[in-house]
Length: 443
Image (cartoon, rainbow, N blue to C red; front, side, top):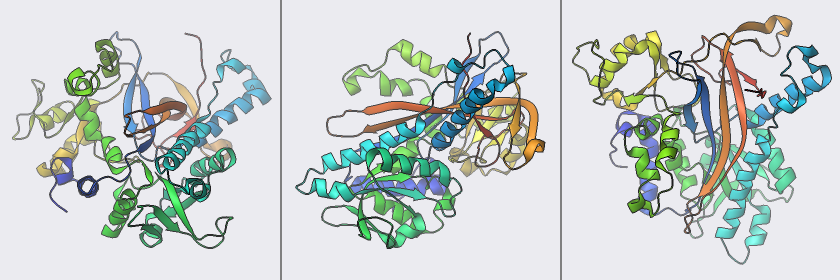
């Protein structure tokens, strides 16, 4: 399928996806529209050197941005506990008006429904109404899915509020059940008998929503990657497409921080015909980013950086290890290398693989924020009091890529994840943090 450069050359997972995207591009993309259900994650940064506390971006998620529905349930729980107990007067901040609404489920489902509607409008043929009445949204899920309840709330909302049926299949199932019509490029999926009320075992898919496909584990054989290509070669709207998934990679995040790169996308009038953002807007956006660099890059190094026969990016990472995190091109948690573990890791990382990693300055969480972390099923003994840090995620959707160049986008909700301050990772599904909710207080 051809050679690849950059990260895809040394990271097999990224390379497999990139090769299939390049093949799709060379053959001609059938579906111009792209749908994204995104989540941008932030932590409070308190450097303690006189600078004010600010929000700093951790990452921008373009695939399987999860826990929107369950975060809404957590917010509802905390509001219910206030109504039933007033939290026994524990704080003057605990007032009804300080609990902000969280309607993430409806917002994310709205994004999927807009993609479904756009599919029908784009395929403006005589039987459009008949086909759209039976077309479904496909949720691509993992084998032995653990996060099914977060996904089911979206499924219920789509049926209840928009009249859209959802079908769920894994990549393994789709290797035999999915087929693309060679003439119309419609994606059709064969279902088990009795899953839908109108009797058909074969349905047309309007939107492919990926809750799998972000980790190499989801592609155990080449056939699974080929199935991803098959889905993308259809006229179904992908959420996200391969190229949109790759755009959320850590290397892209790091490159955008380089001088002039972001400006090329947002301020280049010669390229886009108009300056979308002002210089002040760009500076404000950049102020939410921490310092980053590629391990394979030439960067300025501290004076006390070890003089080893390595790239300056690696030498800088060794010198500043105690205040850094190393990130590969992975999603889902449990992949990063932190602080004191960095030098030993660099000793074992083959030079050829360094291109697939970035170094990022750690966000300094505020000190002295204590709370209780509660794990389900353990009773009162499971409540642990500790210093914590909370991560804020902002959800939104965007539909774009049409001939008119229009972008439809909407911010739709939030989540809060709280973990012990000494924990490096932050995933809920991986057991490092718990779902929390916002409480607004006067400044």
